[in-house]
Length: 222
Image 1 (cartoon, one colour):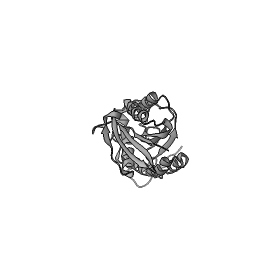
Image 2: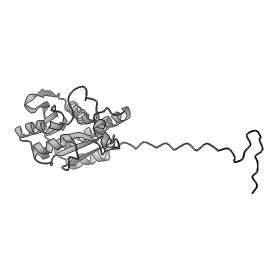
Image 3: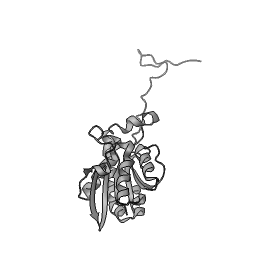
C-alpha cells in the first residue's frame, strides 16, 4: 500500500497558482478526502499530515524546501519512519501530458524535473510511484521554466482540477496497494477531447475580367 503521499511545488503565495504547484493542489485534495490537515513540521522540512486508514498509518507531505530540494524533505520523513520507495507516491506537474490527463507509473527517469531529480538523489533510487499531472508543454524548450512558473489559463486550470478529482477516485485502491486497478482508473479516466471547429469557407472571389462599373462580365478572347 502507499504509506506516504507527496505533492511537489514551491512554497509561498507567489507560486501558489502556478503550474509547478499542481502536486500541492492534488495533495490538498487528498488531505480533504482523508479529513485531515497539513501543518508545518520543521523535522521534515514541510507541511505534513498523519492519519490512519484501515489500521495503517498514512503520511501526507508537501515539501517547503522549494522544488530543487524536495528530496531533502521526502528522505527525512521516509527514512525516519522506514517507508520504502515503493510505498510512496509523488504527485507532480508533467509537461509531456496535456492538461486534463494524468498517468501513474513506477520508476523511470526524472526527465529534467528538478523535484524528481533531487528525490532520486536523496533516496538513491527511482523506484517510487509518480502521479504525473498534465500541464502541457509551451512548445519551445527555452520557454519551459517560464511556463511552469506561470499560472495556467482558466481553461487549463479547470482541466487540471478535473483531473485531480478523477485521480482521487483511485485513492482507495492506492491505499489498499492495488496499483493495477488504480492505474486502470487513472489512465482510462480521460476527458472528452474538444471538438476542433471547422474553418469557415473562403469568401467568393469576383469574376476574372469583371467590370466593376458594369453587370456584364467581359469575355476574354485568345
